[in-house]
Image (cartoon, rainbow over the protein chains, first blue to last red):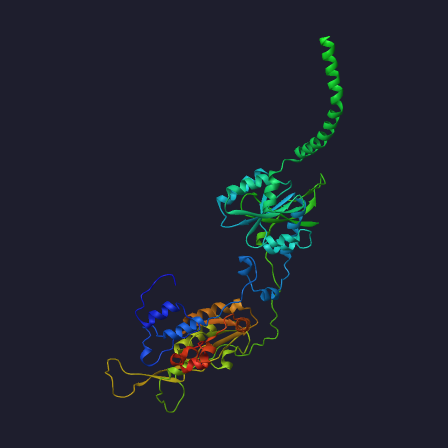
Length: 248
Length: 256
């Protein structure tokens, strides 16, 4: 009860203590209370007892709000998945995309439509990233028997999938920074399942050629150092001899 | 020849997928999709329809006509009996006999001949006698209600009988429908009727009723509150018996 109301009668007391009564409670009147224009009085003690003895739900052990708002666990187990050839076809398509693209990022959408969406898709298209929607059931089917089946943990709520033939994580993150309605949940990059933090780290890595160059330089540094060390005394000796010959 | 789903139109914007056949091009031999496509947005899943072979449709499947006034030799004026409306209906009156669809009363009330006619005409007009049946679950008006003439002062005895009504308790089934049809066919006409009744009513199916029963059972078993109103009343907790009526001792707050 957030607001303070002045309790002037039993009726208002009842409304303060238990503002809403159960829908099953009827409003049959008799004798003096037959005037249905006035609210029926209920004693405050009875109202309090009714509100105190209300039904309390058992604690929900499920983690996310999306799961808790869904069906109860027993009901979930009872639901039977019906045959749907269209859904199977879409799942096949999704699996094809999953296997052939270098990157598949799972994005969560909230209130995203119209020009914002078009601009978002256009910006991503510049870097050769396409955004597609598959429902959670279809995406779950697509991922079922693959080694990436743990992606089903991300398939809760409204999701879209950004995929490209090469892993283009940096351009994706750059565009996502500017669109607050879309958030990155995770993805599959270069055959590796990554979380959001992993993908951000991956984006900051230099390109493959640069990495090769760094590795080569690290390896050759050791070799170069040893060769330098070996050549150092000889060079020193030649310099000393030159000095002596020039001075003499 | 295999089939695949392709994004149609601009890739910017909402999804419109198209189903295409993959065929080799007649000259180059490359796999191409010809321009003849089917929009998958219009494709639907067609589930197998339910089997209603066990349902029999009687010969006279429409609702019977109910009289306005019962055929009595002597019409006797009765007490109002509003207390009789309290509480739930008999258990046999809250069950669907045909185990298909019906209207259930969610609060008590009195039904007049006008309501009966409204129900009868609506259903008989809309139903298909070959595939559906409809049945009354309530009696014709039998309870007399009196009324004094307009403008008369108090006194002079009880008024004359004005009209007849059927008293209806909460949770009673009013009318039932069924047949070789799905719920969607019957729902509009039953909903229209339920809205016009003089008490709160809703359209129910056998599945809904079973579901409610299961839900209630689950709630009873999984109540984390150690105290229920039933306990409070039976054990006279907090000395509340002063404020508890005989109906609470019977129905424990579920019905008033």
